[in-house]
Image (tube, rainbow, N blue to C red; front, top):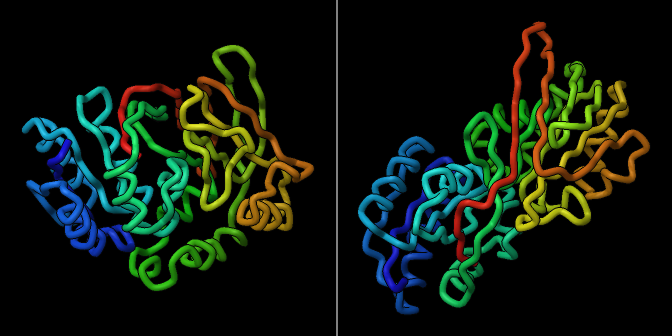
Length: 280
């Protein structure tokens, strides 16, 4: 694989800048860049990847953060192509899970000197995700943090955006089914279901892995806003499983049915699979 397509997006914090820098480094190290594109959003990124796969390209490199990498894995699942990861986002949790430091140089080194391996993907509502899927507070913060704020403040952008939800958020009821057998009924502010090892810059669970065929589940059952804030800081520090109200486990499949604040219901099913190949 001495030829590659490289893509980056404006939505990622350093995705667009990373494309030019990575292309230059890769060319100097013997990999010919046959296509290079800066895309406006994740829809355009997905379209470009599908085109590259259809054209027969075997190495598709994406410069971006967790959102961009999660967008990339869907079109590459079950395909004879390899994803090369250039960290270019705010958190870069997926890159860390692969052992890639959050720099362009580290991504290039992994592509040039690393190995190709199959890793797990999560699947929620028939859509693949690379690292984690969330319900509740974290999902709200992630969806509402402006791109301009992430460009300006980095990971602190999430903490800034979280101030209002930390005060106003209300818990929801949830029934979790593990591997079609065990059931848990919970009331919580948020649920994190991770396919990879890292959630932010810290492991979600001590033994979490992207190659074990399992998903990691984490939540807390404290219902006061003090306990919510405590959980938020514990996750940032990486000691969330030490909380007295922590609920966590690993499973091959889980199904979460939860009622949200307007009394409607939604169902999310996640399953760990092993379809894609990624180079690192």
